[in-house]
Length: 325
Image 1 (cartoon, helix red, strand yellow):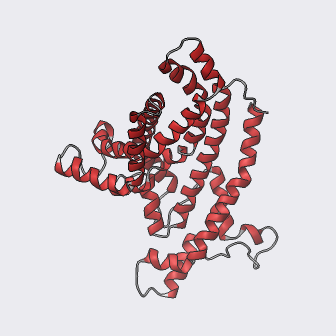
Image 2 (tube, helix red, strand yellow; image 1 turned 90 degrees about the vertical axis):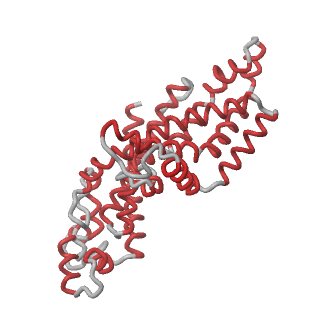
Image 3 (cartoon, helix red, strand yellow; image 1 turned 30 degrees about the vertical axis):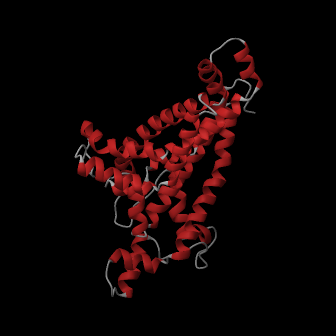
């Protein structure tokens, strides 16, 4: 298994280089260093001398991919792409355009993001799987029909409606929790309770339907008929056999949310003024801060690759027939 993990990590290197390259090309396709300088300097009639100084200070005065003025390997290394990208593979994200250390900002902001993301993920997964098992238990009945209709209605409502409606009812009208903000320590629960509840409710329609489909597919297989023939109740069959055999597709679906666990919800953090990584990314996009944008995209790609490897390894835990060669 160790050799498999090492091989997957080596395979991930060209993927990370490709993600970084695409991010660079897309960002500088719509922006130029001069545009970034004007926005950072914040002046309508900024002089060309000030723009050139800002570009020299931030390292944007070099060619993007190829430096014809340099010699040897410096033709490729003395460029914006290389100088801004190489250090990230050592998890050195450098400084943002405002001078703040990006790594330090990530360490500070990861707490609020995880305070929302982890409860949302755990509670959401428990609720979605439970509801899906209930619908599978009462399949082809009015309970199943009503549940599917409610799931479709929930899927049809925009996530913004849940956020705005939750803020109005729970925070403003009922005054149960603060409408926005964040606090450190144990007081954090008052600020994350509503975003977590909205996050769970917002995903209940699509996730419950997806898990219900997986369980209904498993119910039609031979091992389920064998379990019923042994005299097990329908609930025992669902929990003891169907749920266990559905773990692999569940794990596959879970891996896609791993980067979001760290990066947080962009909309949720912005609406609730939570100083997490999601709001940090939104601010960087608004300010056209390429240093922060590339760091967050790279970090998300690394987490996604690690999540895929962890999912493959977990397959061997839930199904002994799986071999990683």
